[in-house]
Image 1 (spheres, rainbow, N blue to C red):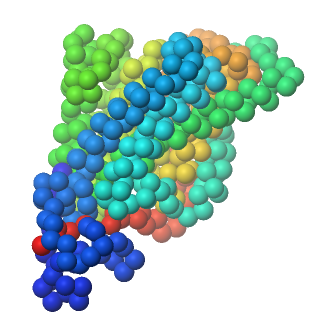
Image 2: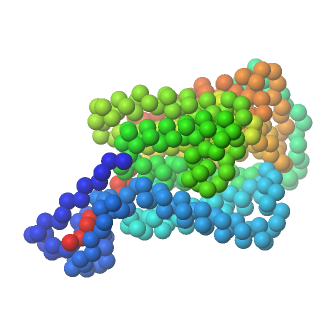
Image 3: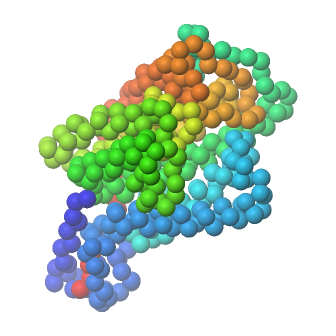
Length: 405
């Protein structure tokens, strides 16, 4: 990642030679007194606080610790959670544990950078309006996809699976479950990672990260231990089938645009380099799901990029959180289709894929159909039309932290 230069404060600074440089409403980098004489090592701290690499490493370590502790407590209280069945109650608890672990880890790193958790792409204008607009967009987009599949005969509906008060009850439970899922996944990728990488990543670091992900998939597709599994200290399943090609496709598609931004020295290239990395990584984690095909994994990466664009044009990740939650809710509960290869319990409608897997999605569900790609592109176009005419949202930069002499 690009070096973060640390100019020394001027000797004639009104606050004294030991003052940290900060804006008029920003706290001093260290302590509360201008005579602090602690010097921050340049390899750990740059002009924007704790360096991005260390921030991510600390969050990963803390997340692992907190999720293990909270997960152990949850399973001790209710051993049934260890079964990981795809039901709304278990989904809420099993996703709430990583969300709480993520919040705890990011909160501690945010304090080191003199930031709030909301500063990680969550402090844009009209957050609730953005969230509810995202809800509508997600449900509408998934409905268009299901409608196209039904019209073509690639999705067939059976009888309604629920009745009476159970319809509303499970609708609320699944709504809560997917809201937690959305908050965790968007909080990880579009909030913490996107914000942190944007600070200092350049094309070469982005290329290196994407290359490591692709190499990991190549090793796992041959039954070997991947690089990420080694670093994460957690085994990842061997890839079966052609699912890894979805990651390769998004990695290749992002190469030329990101290189062009780098060569042209575009001012906001860091945001798009980060979007390339987080979108590729978002597709990468879907390779662990059973029943995924390459189209479904590529579609996950593509919609991850759409969510990055939503941050750029709306100023926050709230639209993405709402869209993500509504898409999953409509797919899993309302229409009763497979969700990334998983079939949920207690869904409203029942449906089964029919015909060619290329068009129906097969065991992957609607996300594995080739028709998902134009639907996601349509969602991207609608996002740009609705919000893109305005001036791109100014994302709040991190506070400046300088070495103190």
